[in-house]
Image 1: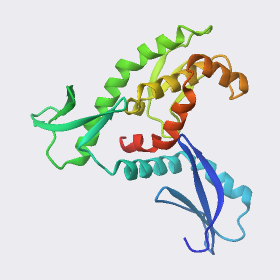
Image 2: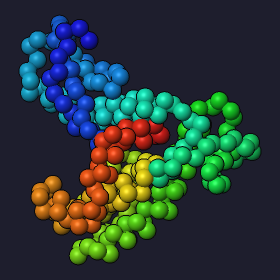
Image 3: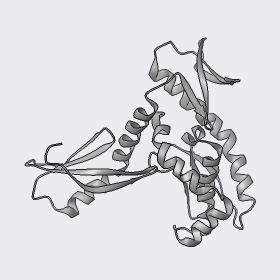
Image 4: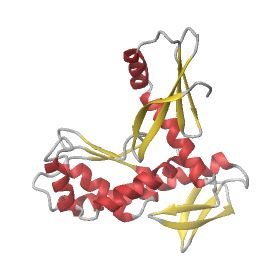
Length: 236
């Protein structure tokens, strides 16, 4: 990244990532994501406005690559275990034809996957996490929503790479299934965050006061996401 300098800081679900700007003669604007760092490559004459426009247009693509790289680095591509609600489960391949996974004590038994087939293992683990999320999230949402004046609408699982959750104006809640890897307190914080948007569709002091009311430990949970959230994106 010769001649690169920090030009911008891009917000991510778990913090920020520096965007480096390299100026050199070329016809188009290039984007590289390497080691969890973004590099924009543009000719000297390209305006700041145009650079910000391109960054916004490619935001989802950039964040997805950054989080995947961060997740792979933090997790070390260790597919010998899976973290479920903050607790590690050792993986054990059991043979069989059907690709599935089930928990048995402190192990996760994975069938239908050949030893060494990392893509297949990752896919099975992703499906397992989605299934677990579909079971857990509705109950946690109902528990916290019981303390809300306005009740949420439907709940959907999200595969977003830039958000842990969202709340629409009509009260629909979306929660990222990858949160199943985080401690339960972190799951509850994200739910409380989205429920607080039922009253305040912003991040004003009133919004954070509502988040505090629903989840007094939200600061620790948010800190955990900023420190470890990237590793949750190892699964697609």
